[in-house]
Length: 109
Image (tube, rainbow, N blue to C red; front, side, top):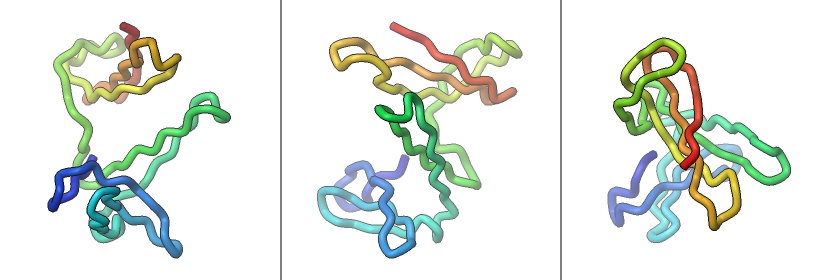
């Protein structure tokens, strides 16, 4: 995730004339992702309803980390993110990805 240096709002990926930019919805700040060596990875769960865009930096991982045990390899650190996979009145699903082996699993609240 990348934030606007002017107003501290989350920058959103957008395509404009074949180029991909990170754009601030509040103040209009715009930065080209190619200059930052980013790529946009799209994954779809339930194709008709959920489309998730993830921005990865080729030089470093920007995901937050947490100390949790991996069920596959026993590693003690994982990246995590939240996705609203069910109705809005239910808790979001927490996903983890092990920093050691790359195994991904989910946790429901």
